[in-house]
Structure formats: C-alpha cells, structure tokens
Image 1 (cartoon, one colour):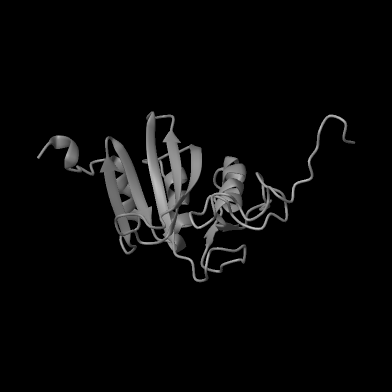
Image 2: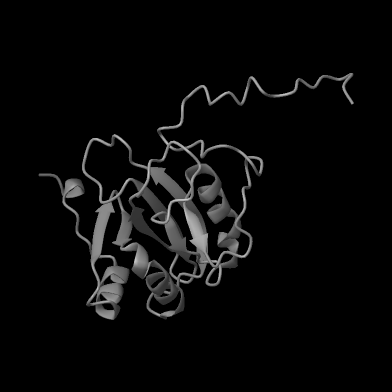
Length: 187
C-alpha cells in the first residue's frame, strides 16, 4: 500500500479540536495533503468559533463556503447535503476544511422550507461568510440562522427552486419558456 493512500491524520488542528471537544462526535480525513474535519450540524458554530479564537488554530480567514449535493453518490454519506468551509491561517500558511452534513426531512423537488436544512451562520466569526452562505442558500436551499441578510443572491426573489440540487431538472421547470424576450429595440 502506498503512503498516499494511508491517511496519517497528523494535522495539529485535529488534536486541538479533539482535546477541546472530547465529548462530541468528530470525524477526520486527509486526502492528498488536505485535512478535513467532519462535525455534527449542532456543533458546527462552537467548533468554528474555537478554530478562529484558539491560538493553536488561529484560522483568521474563511476562504470559501461550499454546498454539496450527495444524491446518488456511490458511497454512503451521513446526509444528502454537505456544507464545507475552507479556512486559512495566515500565521502558519495553513489550510483546513470543516464539513457538516444535513439530511432533508421533506422532498427536495420544490422550494418548501425544510426545518432539517438549517445551520448556524458563521458571519459573526468571519463577516466574509455573508455572500458565500447566501449562495449556498440560493443554490441548495440550506438556510443559515442569525444570518444578517439571508436572501437569494444569484436568482431572483421568487425563483421556484434551488438549481444546484441534483433532483432539479436539467432543462429547468419552464423558466426559459416564461422569459420575456428583450432585444435592442425593447424598452
């Protein structure tokens, strides 16, 4: 077995988080030099606050917030939707990923608000999370508690779905047919 395929899990952040949250369910992975901590949705905000404030971690920059739909994924996942946060520590020139999984409680082929698809916003920790969290909400339907301005950012206010969900039809649900054609002579 090659050294690349055996995870070492030697990132120092894993030990710091494990020590601080010894009673919590945490999972860790490393793949091709990228370290990922998987936390329960209820523990996400506390873990993220720790990663920002603890001097051993000092992740002072939130690089990205990404939504993932695991519908029909070939291997088992703990939930259909994942939300991943990519953190950076400029003092150590280090990157670290934190991921959580959510399972919908109602069918996802519409726009209905699902009480199971809520996470605590991290905008109070990293203000730059405001727009990426809005993108995850708009495209996947994951909502964020205590977000200062949770509204659609890429589609219009009354858009009838979340287009990056894998059960969204590739041709849309009639949006193209209902557009008013605007050309250069239109006012």
